[in-house]
Length: 302
Image (cartoon, rainbow, N blue to C red; front, side, top):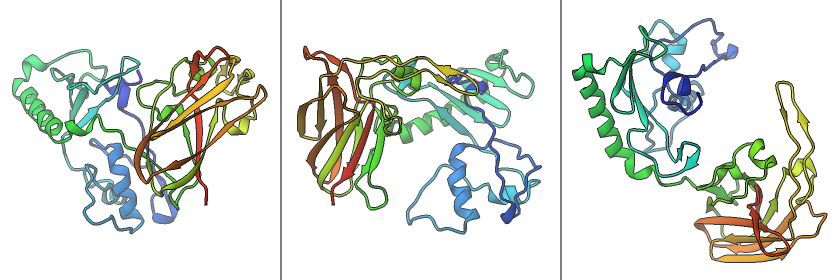
């Protein structure tokens, strides 16, 4: 189950193929590998150089990809879920985690499973392995002490940098609101969240709000048609009686009327360099909050 701390919630396949670099597949790497290993692996494969002072919890798998018989180093690893608890936003909870070591999995800080003997994780053997449980718990305590204070800090999205301008944000980037898929959007979740951003270059910015993706061409108030995909479908999206839009970026806020046939609502605001937050709301004719703008395009005006 997605977001589960048991093996099925976080164990996924990773396929690496690079014929030009001699990686043609047909080999399996044993041991625990993690998503944080991908970046250092790519750095080594590309003969790139990491920035000075750069630190990463991952390791390069390049030597093991080139020589699959060379075992991946044994290490203790932590899988920690944060912010999203039972489908709702909240504080990251201690022990909402799994500790991985070889064939062992410590779940929720007190359940222990041997996934070689018990891949379904149905037999808790913590009582029979107290020393191992203690060791895994101690590793987690040290990990939490090192990173716990950062788990409630949102990593801002850069706006206006020379590397990417404009920047397109969506409701999946919100803090404190869960609207991250088409079912949420089409059902019109009556909520709004906060975008945490870092203004790379201060100046005048064009901030354009949309309810639907720009490429859809749909109006802000319009419903979305039924979408039939290869492996499923999405129902018709609801119409929304939008009459005005409110936007706050940093210390600046503004409300504008929204024409009935508008596909987007554009604001211009002066943004100072540095971290800040952005919020939005659609309102009906009576001034009632309807929902946040699910899409935002931010562009620094040259």
